Length: 314
Ligand SMILES: Nc1ncnc2c1ncn2[C@@H]1O[C@H](COP(=O)(O)OP(=O)(O)OP(=O)(O)O)[C@@H](O)[C@H]1O
Ligand SMILES: [Mg+2]
Image (cartoon, rainbow, N blue to C red; front, top):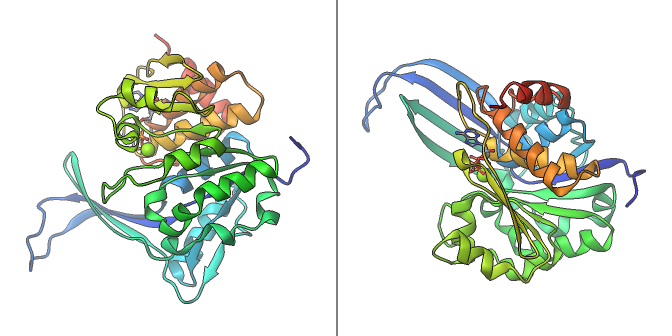
């Protein structure tokens, strides 16, 4: 697989703004107004967090999505570039508006409203062979927020494999809980499937993890199932390997921990590491991500992740 390609990873998926309202004393009832003592506007989206973090680990990364021709869209392009991610393939569509999530934090809990906007409109046939051929690997996530991409996903991965790319996918939660991904059509073209445990069980339509794994054992795909504080499990060709999560002295939040895991794992894979090392590197990148607020700021570089994770060993 050509090391001479322009990019290590082509990341396709969700990129939107998160408007965070924090320190709200009391949630307003309909018709009321309340005060928030903190506010932030940041880059959001599961796939965007993956792209940003794998770029900081050292993979040459390009991002592909649709944005509106608006101030949120321009803000996101700048933020992506600041993280070292190439944005030249991103489509700006003046007919569409860039998506946004408003997040209300109340004590330990949160409430979110999302307007998906432009991200719903990217179709898999807009990802040309030229764009696919520019990278060694393709990754996507948040697929249930991207119905047009979902429709052509099996074919996109099939084309990618034909062009010599390796392929990976996370799904994130299905807000409509239909879980109608067409997994059987996708898995023959997918090298790494990286959902969390709950998502995987629902996608497989089985009552528990064991029976969900049994139902996909005939595929060659490497399944990497994230299990929150319980760590993660890797499953391929009937062989299982589990890893405990690292002990974190003080978790700030687990936003983007799953995407940071994916970034650490795929970065290791693209550097020719053994599968077990990829699992370890995913786990420790996720751990380091929980030690800072949000999904992006905790990861600075590969060296920083190694140094920080060293001190987490029991
Ligand atoms: N409490 C914790 N302590 C240590 N590590 C954790 C903890 N929670 C999560 N992690 C790490 O983060 C990884 C991913 O977590 P999780 O299973 O929550 O993924 P996810 O649901 O996909 O996350 P996301 O919310 O980013 O989508 C875990 O496999 C583990 O390595
Ligand atoms: Mg996840």
